[in-house]
Length: 323
Image (cartoon, rainbow, N blue to C red; front, side, top):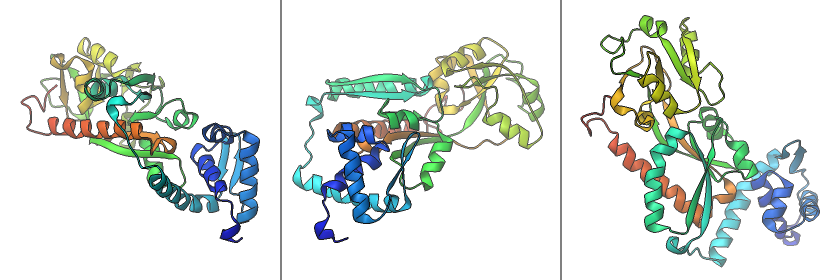
């Protein structure tokens, strides 16, 4: 292949297909027909001597050659776009609707500040919240069902940290830890929380799927212990209400306890065993990476995270160690 004879328009098509991982969605993004996109990819295959994209039941899968090529193509196209159409963005005049997925406690934690920012700076921006019922939001992002997901996605974040060629981007917003939560006058509230009395209690588990097995149960199994999960719920708000009015205990991310709305009725204790840190990650699709409005949204969440982290730093509040 000679670079001088390569049709550079084919690289725009290649970039769109790699971003969407789907020929139909790429065609819609490019305002082309699907046959035209397929033909362009066929021509690029012939020019480069590689299959580039292999059809699967869920779209297309890039070959190693395509994964190696894409970062350079994307960088070159971004440089050209910046040179030809310099970015201008006035948030006060922008009109956009963002679809975001978060758990209820995460939404309660972030949305008040985000709404204040939108009312103050971006009156033409709207937000539509989508229920988050899974720890795997990538299919929702790939289908275009949502523009942004914020939450604890341990498997996804670990995979994205070493995976190349994925169209999903991510950023860590916050790292915290889990604590045991119970009502203030719970029988265990005045005692040291030992492993024995922890396992002997009745437990509530926040489970999006309803499955009565979680991170705590995996940690207990490693030390040959178990607990009785009397109730599973799929909302942190519900968990706070139930625990505040029963003898059930639960495990929650420390920074989300206030989101239950039951702060004055609850206390927290350190767990008598070790759990991994809980991370709050922000995930979005590559298709939105250069969108000025989307950048504004992500920067706002980053700024809110910095402010929240300072508020939650040890010693910043007389109630920083008690909920």
